[in-house]
Image 1 (cartoon, protein in one colour):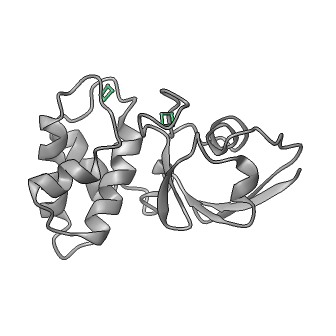
Image 2: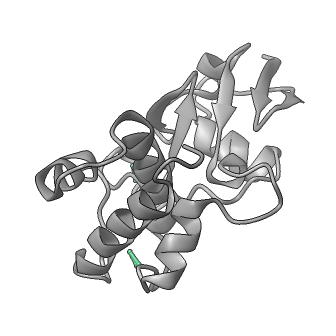
Image 3: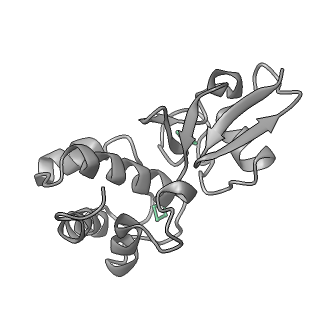
Length: 158
Ligand code: FES
Ligand code: FES
């Protein structure tokens, strides 16, 4: 099967896609976009989160064939300016990244949260990030990063 999709604003075409091939595999291994991480491959951890037609999904649970003629944004595409997106900058500055395996999914989930709700409460942050598991940070730094990103983006780009 041939799959053509828009990824981070560019058209990508891949051939010989197997029915069981995941979108995560296609992005990482065939399209040169290794940002989305494979940490469980079972839809449990959120490390592989990408936008599919504007909706965050676990790319390990989406068949690559389902992405045909659809629009995907990965962590690599959150910023198109060549600079880090304010969410990425906030995670860096708050020390919310340790091994980094969870980080791409958390960045996409945080970006999605703040685009829907620019001033989330702590319970709203916890709920929005509940599907993203981190084995390292204890989550406090991640919460700090989301608060800092909200401050940075106040009136700025979502
Ligand atoms: S790798 Fe997809 S949810 Fe964990
Ligand atoms: S920083 Fe290691 S899993 Fe989150």
